[in-house]
Length: 114
Length: 114
Image 1 (spheres, rainbow over the protein chains, first blue to last red):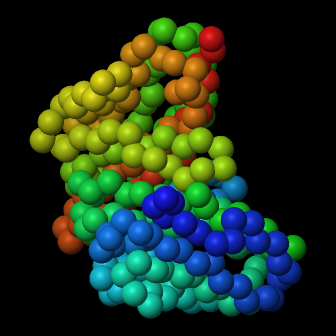
Image 2: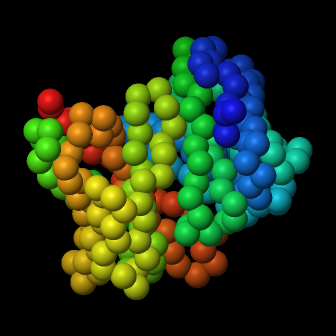
């Protein structure tokens, strides 16, 4: 059984479009995260939710809007896509919002904006 | 401003030898350090961690050393195996209101040659 799943795995779209990436975890974890891995391979946190409550919101354009309908899901919606949004987006979850708890990552969604 | 740096983009070692991956950080408030391993087209997976109150943590073939005065940590893999070939990310967390936010380095690609 997949612990943290993301859909789609690949997403190719044109500038200006709106798209969503979905994430689901079946681990019963309270905390979920979105990370972005850019072309230089840096993994940077974007958002974190704990029990559906937003607890981390990094300096991310407000075109990016996370939504957590329940503890097991954290979706990422991106409006007016730009070329610079091309990256790999990883979802992760952990039992609690503490660094001592291992974060489990999904396989990533490669977004290409043309 | 990259607070966690892995200055070696790649490392190649012979099977059976020791692999040493290095990581430097700048923020003295970090109190928890982790190593993640990533295979192509997969998400990172947790490998080993260390709290700032310790200077060494060992788990099987993997040992992490922390030198707080030098703001440096290293991951030792002994003996190295071909299956260890992957990208290794160092991550750090800490500070007031710590919410599990991880700051990642840019990764080191390890190749273990048979």
